[in-house]
Structure formats: C-alpha cells, structure tokens
Image 1 (tube, rainbow, N blue to C red):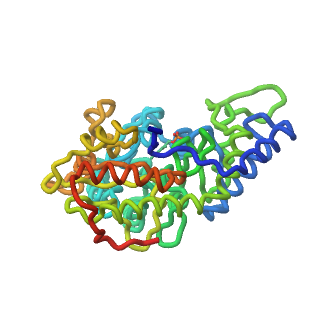
Image 2 (image 1 turned 180 degrees about the vertical axis):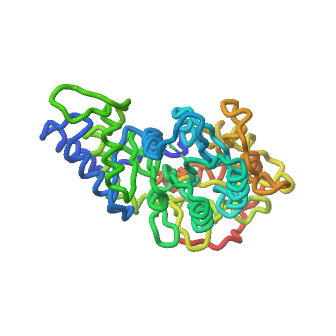
Image 3 (image 1 turned 90 degrees about the vertical axis):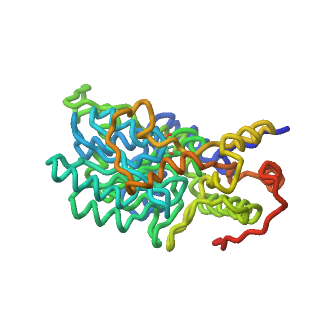
Length: 390
Ligand SMILES: *Cc1c(COP(=O)(O)O)cnc(C)c1O
C-alpha cells in the first residue's frame, strides 16, 4: 500500500521556470535576482517593509536574537508547545530559555502564564530580552493579549510563524506582529524551497544588518576584512526561485489544507471525546496540520495506539509536539503554567495527534485515513456536530 505522509512537498509546476532563470543568468549562489524577488514578494505578502531570505527558519530565528542583542546569560521567553527549533537559537546565544505554557483556545502561548512570568522577571530585576511566540500548526496565538503584555513590560516579540504562513489574525497576516517575524520553507511546511527561511520586519535598517551578519559579517573593503562574528545563512538563488513559484500558490495551498481539515471534521468530528484544534474567533488559520485530541475518559484508544494502527497500514501520523520544558535538553529550565491545576501543553501532548494534512492529499488517500480511524474507534460513521468555516 502506498505511503501517506503527514505533510509532503507540493510543487506547482511553475518552479522549473524560476530555476531556469537562475541558470540562464548564472546566479548559482546565495544571492541573485530570485533572492531579491522572493524577499520583496514575501514582504508584500505579509504587508511589511522588508524581508531577508535565510538558509532556514532556524537561522532566521538566530539572526532575530542577534539583532535584539541577546547576550550570554540573558533570558528569553519561549512558547513551550513547539518544535525544538523555536528554542535552539536561545542556546546558540548562550542565553537562558524560560518556557511559557499554552492556553486552551489556540494551544499557543497563554497570556496568563506570560503575565506571571513577566511580573516575576520584573520583581527579580531580570527582564527577558525577547519573547518568542509560536503560531502552532498554523493557528495564530492570542496576539492582542500577548502584545499588550509585552508592550506593558517593554519586551520585544519574535513571532515564530514557521508553521503559519498564509494565516491571518483579525485580517492581518500571521508573522507580521512582532518586532521580527520568522518563516520556514522546510520540506514539510505549507510551501517549501526544500530548505529555507525568511526574517521579516518593518525595521529596514536592522534587516540590512541581518544580511550583513548572514554573509560572514564582511566589512566594506576590497580585501576580506571582518570586525564581527558572522554566519553563512543566506538562501540559495536556485531555492529562492522555488520559493517564488510556491508563494504564487500559497493561498490555494491554505484552502486545500483547510478542506482536508473540514473533511476530517465531517467524518468523525461528532465522536464524543474527539476535539479538533479550535480556531480563534476572527482568525483564519492555514491548518498546516490537522490536529485533534482524544479525551481518555471518553475514548479508550490512546494517540499512540492510533498512530501505531495507522502506521501498520502505511499512514504517517504523529503526536503533538513534546513541550520543550519536558525535553531532556531543557531539564531544569523555568516554566510557567497556564494555571496551577491546568498544564495545558502537557495535556495536549498526552492527548494530541496530527493526521496526514498535505495539500496534495487525494480524496482517496484521505478516505483511507478516515476509514482506518473510524475502524480503530469502532464507531459507525458519526455525524459532525462542529460548525465548519471555509
Ligand atoms: C519548522 C519550524 C522551525 C524551523 O524552521 P527550519 O526551516 O526547519 O529551520 C521553527 N519553528 C517552528 C515552530 C517550526 O515548525
């Protein structure tokens, strides 16, 4: 049986012409017209003044922390329920991460927990240099509340929008809310360049500095002169070409992923104990991955059993991200919970599962997934009780 992936690359067919353009102009380098074009087009898409293309989303996050002058032993706050790449750059800076729990409405950073953490930081006289807010699985965090807190305490936001390109919060593009926003074009993301990233901001001067740092921090001189430590973090002109073609179909990809989500909801949204990741009012998620939780009081099957059953018929499914405060790497790190009796991120990790969600998933493939899930739950095709938003 053919394998069904969680999220596989979905090329549009237009990529080759941009790659040819790179070859025709011989810009086979981490600079060139596709890089310039891709930067301009992403900046336009997210309605910001500038964008700097990087070799990965992780590199863009690292540069954001550099631009915010994070120093050894500084503190950086970060959402706990996320992929490791959100926090690794904190370690690159020899800084100390403090992890913030999720809330129930978006699964993202809890304003309650953030407020507690900021108040403690103020009391201890050690404010964080930045707050990294993640938009999980394409769902925007509670930005109004989080921004109000960060403004009150004067801490800049880095928006990790690696999973949420194409999503909107109250009509504004995801990734455009922080001092810096970060996107990823890794192979599993909603659009891909195989590997790549983007740092976005309205601060044009600081993005100039980001490009300087990303090209080995080479001073203006005929000879190779350096007075600062730099990185080799720029995006290839060939890959930027792939990105330009992918960006042309981004909105279609979002629609396709939302349709995948809606079909899952129609198929088993009515089963008691299954809860799909909610969509916050006035937001439009890209539904990068369809994620849901299984309530153990109502459903005997655990996420791990479901993942195993799907794996046996060659369908890839995954648990929800393991919270970073539970990772061995971050043992002993400070962590602020949503409330004393509700550690939301841990519950989501224990109960959550991600289903195949690619924009190139065919109806037949998705039916295979649905049939297997329904078989595992041992229920007749249940009607959905959820209201769908298209
Ligand atoms: C993918 C991802 C990243 C990292 O992007 P890369 O391009 O793989 O380096 C960062 N944060 C989150 C939340 C991600 O999902």
